[in-house]
Image 1 (spheres, rainbow, N blue to C red):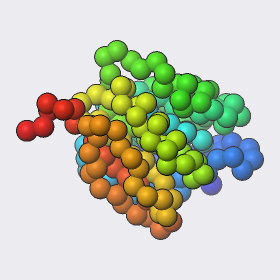
Image 2: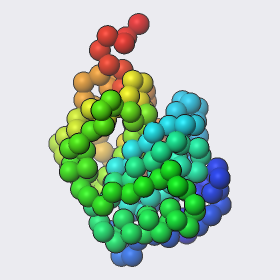
Image 3: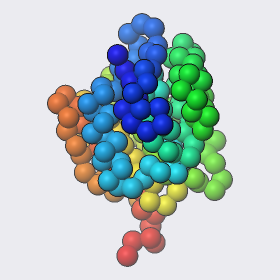
Length: 190
């Protein structure tokens, strides 16, 4: 059972997509990850981009915890429909889903860049080069001081960050590592 951990929808169950195509982040990892994000003070009022949304657990957790807007990107149509049902069931009107591949969804960044938090939980079989390309493609979406949280297998290496993205630090939760980084555009360094 997957549920929202805290916030306005805390304790409510999430539907999960049919089949084995998604790997929802465990409640334990999500709780620790969002505790870290709250410590970094990036959730309240944030504009969030959830890449490889799967069941929508990460993005919907952010919406429940007072994110201003959440865009969930999922290529699997059945999973995207499950996310839409979860959004409606939970009444999280600030969340919306785009049923498209991540690369296609990132092709049209907002102007000006306005994303404060990127949640990226790609399938574990996505290679490091493909992940690096996605992280580079997300860079034009980032507002100053945006935080990126990338969930990977604990056996995966550190992601290759784009220019101006600096590692805050990894956190390991059993077989999962979440890499936290911050966008600090050149010229913003003290």
